[in-house]
Image 1 (cartoon, rainbow, N blue to C red):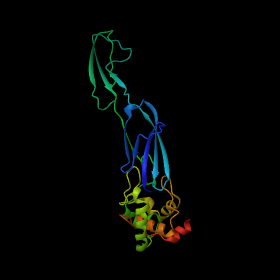
Image 2 (tube, one colour):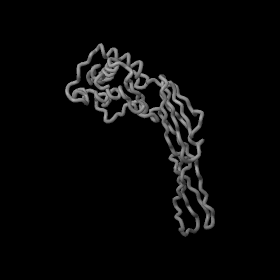
Image 3 (tube, one colour):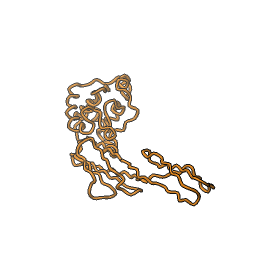
Image 4 (cartoon, helix red, strand yellow):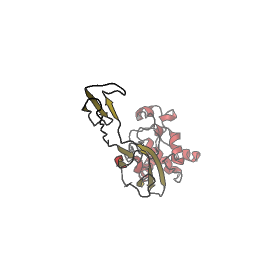
Amino acid sequence: MPIERIEVYLDGGTEPVQVLTQPPFKVTYDTRSLSDGEHLLRVVTHYTNGAKEVKEVPFKVANTPGVLLQGLEEGKEVSGTLDVTLRVADPDVKPTRERFPGLGAAIATAVILGGVWLFFAATGVTNKTLEEVAKPPAAEAAAHGGDDGGAAAAVDEALKTKGEAVYSANCAGCHQATGKGLPGVFPALDGSKNVADKAYTINILLKGKGGMPAFAQLSDEELAGVATYIRNSWSNKFGGVTPDEFKAAR
């Protein structure tokens, strides 16, 4: 489903800290402006059909690094010159060596604020629409008839052509014309094990799942067309799907 805009809110605020209107949907936020501790990021995705999806992601800010003293143990008796190395828990800060004369000298410590950048993908914060696991090469899946077993069903080329138009109008906004999706936001359909599974494809198109809306309002022919298209485009060769199969699954 094409996205109209994505609004990003922080800690219950009523005004979005960022509004994203086109991919790549990424938010860069300097957490040094926040206090250390628990915070909440709320992402509201508005689709062009009027639907809305809300995702909340709690996170914790810890910008104040710890300081480790090397060369001085607690309660240890010392005399003369004290040689202490300060190590700050920031990988960009090199240890410094400070020398302190004798007993009774105060030991100074330096605390250096480290910058932590949070990167959020509207994907990363939105539910995956087609959960992908262990993608097999498309050719291998096709050799086994996809995940359904047996030989791949014949492809109705006329139906596939109709399905391409349905895909362009309803699916390409998220999964892209290339079928590669948007990494971390919308999964790829090209080479997808889930797309190779005919029953899974039929079910998710009819009923939706997570951030993936249902398309039961489309006709059986339109659904069969788009299913046939995504299962036999790009590197996919998973076989066709018929309108009767969608009719039976409703």
